[in-house]
Length: 512
Image (tube, rainbow, N blue to C red; front, side):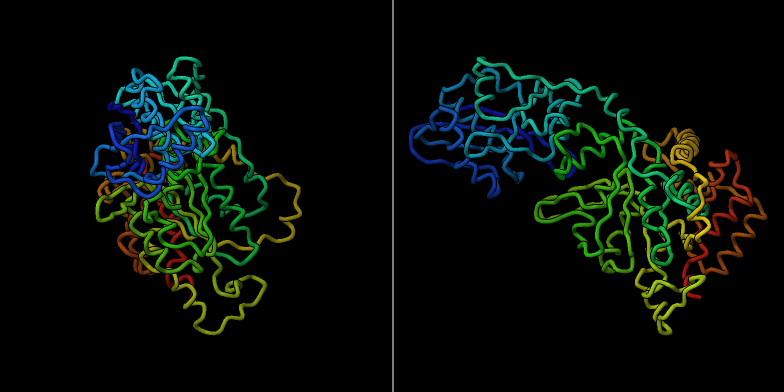
């Protein structure tokens, strides 16, 4: 007898429907075809044990399992459950009439319990698009699948439950999620707040500009000046995720297996802070079975690189293209996958190895030339892609001991949201453009027009600092964001001057 069950394979952040065909005939061998990897091939032992423990029999006949389409490599252990159900149906132990209506995915343990899988959300989206009635999957993943409208999601814990469902002896409980409630539930719910930071008003202003326009920023200052503290609070002033962004972010974390069982939807912008020993593959993604890297896990959120010069140069250089394109393509001999990577880069660093170069009170003990060598660990092309260079100075005792309450993140966020609304209106006819940092050169020329006095000021700054054409565009983008925060229709001279000020640490200005 031939029976078909349905599952899925995840490529990048999208899924592809896989048909699991099981044929049982005379003989006594077990064959699995359709480009399975080792984890899929090993399913026989798990499936056989789970079927026996559940009180059913494993047929002692020739069993052929085909995973179609046969020219696409199938990876992982999530095919255990559809294979087990297919074998039981093909051997006549359960009815096969309802199998065509459901996607079935899950890893089986030897005792018949079902383990979680990766990529439940993109698989559920694919099931809904293909017109399937429901999706049977591990209970730990059911909440992320349940946010897909028009698809019934059943969370199961054992193989026995699935068998009882198809035997119509015991129904499964449908999980329903109110997507709107999920999105609204964590808005404004943050552990950190800018009110905790004493002083540093100029840094807060720079981070407000960065948040309003989605700009990359680097903080340079001595140890203990508050660089990490400020960076951790940046997500608290970013606008809340909208539903589309929340779904996109959740898909990436689902594929990477980073969602907890309690999460249906990621409603807080991601904040990723990898250690400086990270490899280039871990940062941008890849591996034998390609997985999203830190830059994709930070999509729609913040990627914080602390102690930037300590990262390997090769690691930083592979980030240059994703910073520009806002996506990363990982190519292999047989296939290529693409992960979104639209993140805000926030980097921090000491000005020199000892940390006290340009310190107002402490003396730098670094030898001549050491400061320049330390700073040169970060390449010019990477610096060009960072819009705001901000010098962080230590907070004095008077400010630290002050009882005056600093401005809360909530108030700063309100101004950022207002500036983002202006940008949404400006780019309403562009599907892939949402804030100023994403503008192309052509768009910059159209949107960021400046007066003759502004042109003269910018020319002088370009010559004095030796800036590139890319830096020119970025100064204009930041000036446009400052104008949006002010509610100004035009980019005025003071907006341009403030924007240029955030490039003053460029190259020569850093060490001289």
